[in-house]
Length: 255
Image (cartoon, rainbow, N blue to C red):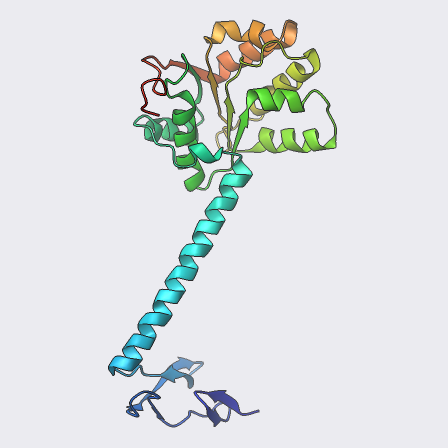
């Protein structure tokens, strides 16, 4: 069946004649590519007239906008899937590149310190670097996570399964929730324990935890029972403790 291009009709396997520019009428030569030793039609040479150049510039700008939109949309989907809160989606911190590099090698971190010392900012800045590197990152606020784990059903199982298998897990503000129910604390331990037991050189599965409290206080803050102690013990094995000192950035109007 005859093919059509630029309003011209030609038989498949045959090259069309040169075509006039629709703007200035100048003849445009045929472009070809060789496939299996045969020249195939690949369009016409672009015309150099101002109108044709302007049309190409508009087309290239439209294509660039579409590409940027697709890239931005894909990034937004990654952020949503990761669960990183909107206010931290452009987080930056001078320590973040080094922390991200260490996390990608399997090092976990327990960031502790007073309010506004940059714990969540640092954790999210490092997580964003890892996310841009193609890692599967999940972020959860401890208060919300433990509240969701009080009633454990299929949704919670799926949530914990995804968090157990992701490349990097960030748990924010551990200990602020006060004593959780024993069942919720046990599920939190199961999450950390699954990641710990399934670490390999290929999939190290590090954890980054932020807290207002030193790691030694985690046991009592998480749960009054043995699950709290188990969580604290596992975090001690998995994470390097980093104290975030300094004044509250928010109270000083810097964050």
